[in-house]
Amino acid sequence: MASCGGEPAAERSAEDEADHIRQFYELLSSSMEMIRKWAEKIPGFSAFPKEDRELLLESAFLEVFILRLAYRSNPEEGKLIFCNGAVLHREECVRGFGEWIDSIIEFSAALRRMKIDVSSFSCLAALVMITDRHGLKEAKKVEDLQNRIITCLKDHVTTSDGGEPGRPNYLSKLLGKLPELCTLCTQGLQRIFYVKLADLVPTPAIVDKLFLDTLPF
Image (cartoon, rainbow, N blue to C red; front, side, top):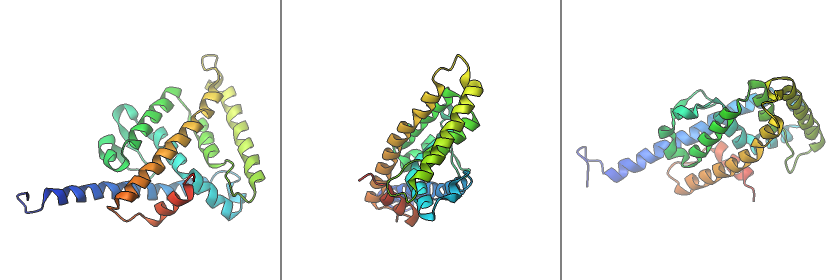
């Protein structure tokens, strides 16, 4: 049955769905560029071979995307603040992100409860990027930098508020967030796969490459 304007409701619904998918892809694509610029500022990152820098960036992108989004956002208000500065509410994201967005909001609430300061967050984000990945040309260099970042994080939390008696095992709790990020990353890959399968909107090349290069199989 056509609407008053003559456009069938099913067509409007499909176009509306496509708009949400375009928004989803745009948020991922623009975040990739922002995260690339951020990664280049990590001390020591530029010393890695170009192939290793690309491998680290693509392998860690979704985890860094989730961590930065969760850290910035306000889960109590359902407000999400993306890398490109976009501020959206859950209702504006859910049709593009699906259930993945609720998992990110839950993770955001968990980070808030930990009261992570900006220095600890910066080290944690760097650790997500600087980690051993299959296919690295200079894995030892990456491992050395990873160890330096862990030492910095440990020094920081033991000499700041994180070292107070009221926050035992704070370092372990921080590092315990990394496996959770891996799980959320897998959910993100599943969402991208589902959206690609629906084929409502062409997948941007940057997202397509990210998806194919990050698959765990």
